[in-house]
Length: 133
Image 1: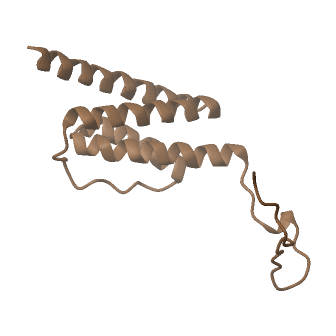
Image 2: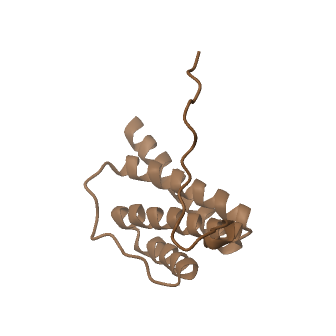
């Protein structure tokens, strides 16, 4: 069982009197989805840079720039991490980006995310085939 709460809740007030819900900046659902989409695409961009996929990285960077209004920071270079692991993570991030892009009805980002999912799935298939020999 649980112990019931015996103290009254503490209410914090800022200086200046009454503060309602309208005192805090609110973002629309669309703005929140744009922020989320830009975050997924930025993470995908990092992995794409680590894999050395320059053309795909430029396409992703263009979408992040469109969503954020500024060019994204870029990874320094290729990673020493297992390429198969990078492709798996990139595929997962592209899938997340696709879900958010679809819910936002962002066709350009959805197409890009789907293309990246396909590319990473194909790369994983070729790694699996190479390992099977």
